[in-house]
Length: 139
Ligand code: CMP
Picture 1: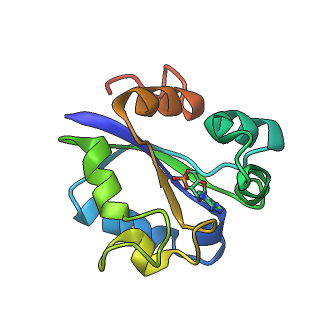
Picture 2: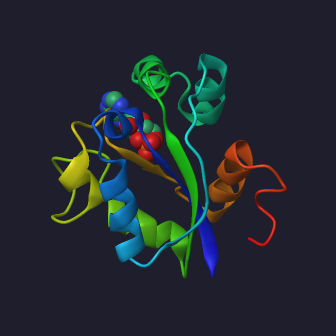
């Protein structure tokens, strides 16, 4: 079993879609191993998305991710990183496959409902960003 980090983003939490998205990922075969509701401040969002610093959408991304509560979670499955990315679909909901989380629940490329780690290395870093050693015991 491996792990990945997902974040239900402010658009989806604010519009009451968190429960449906949690049900979707559980039905897709993921076990929720850690979860909380929190709100990022600007410094935290900038740090989390540091890899995108300098891109034209960076400031908009940080502003959006700090605009309301988010729900980060650790999901467990075989090949969790690649399977979750398949489950959520393409970044832009217009390009996401039918039945994916973003096709069903995202509003736009920026307000796209959910984040998922893009590699095992980044999953480890992103899980450590949100969850303490204590919360990760047993993972
Ligand atoms: P995520 O997978 O969370 O990681 C980076 C995010 O940047 C991505 O989801 C999108 O929400 C956002 N993003 C990528 N490209 C654009 C874009 N062209 N305009 C706005 N946001 C973008």
